[in-house]
Image (cartoon, rainbow, N blue to C red; front, top):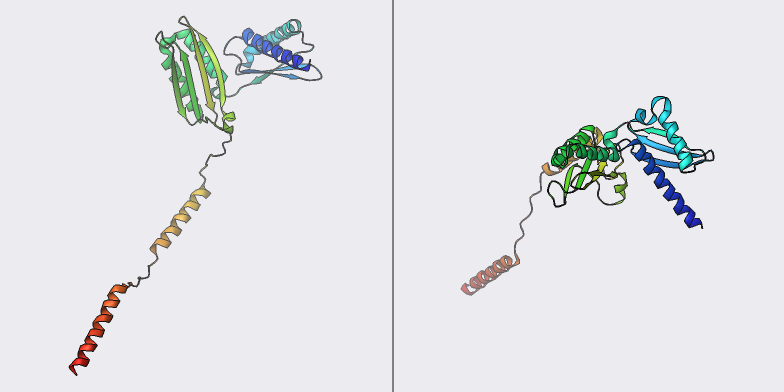
Length: 248
């Protein structure tokens, strides 16, 4: 019974997220988080356009709250707006913008849309970005196009710091899948090396120490006389001594 309740709870949360996104439209909401408190249900809506979500004097918020209470039978839903200050680093926002641009201008200008978005993200200061478009672009056969720039984590535990999102663009030829991965500049990377004046001073000291060691005068090595040469000299000395004795 507990498993069924948990599954039903997750299904209700999914339907609530899809309903709220559909009500406000594509490209307006980044993500929706639902928290349960003793007072009631708190629904956090992250968006880069808080004025559009709230409406005049909070009319849209009150309308959505009433619909959630009646349709999904929530006791006391409370909507909270979380403003995204840097939409260029939000993968869901970028993916939705690309989808809207493709639906507006068509699939023939997909390269222009992708490169402009790529340049915009990199200029904002992102460490890396990757955009993947899959579908009938531009021919009748489905293809996959990749647009990337900068540094991006692919494997390991540090993949969690990469902001990823997906979106779909509905065109006349079919549906175009969009995947966006962004590495923001303020994330902590374990293998990242920062160059500071202290590090530069240490490197210079190491270089000077190596130069001093290399410039030291080397002692001349004594030449080793081979044993064969010594034996031949001894034999010559013996033969000369014997000849001298015979002459006497």
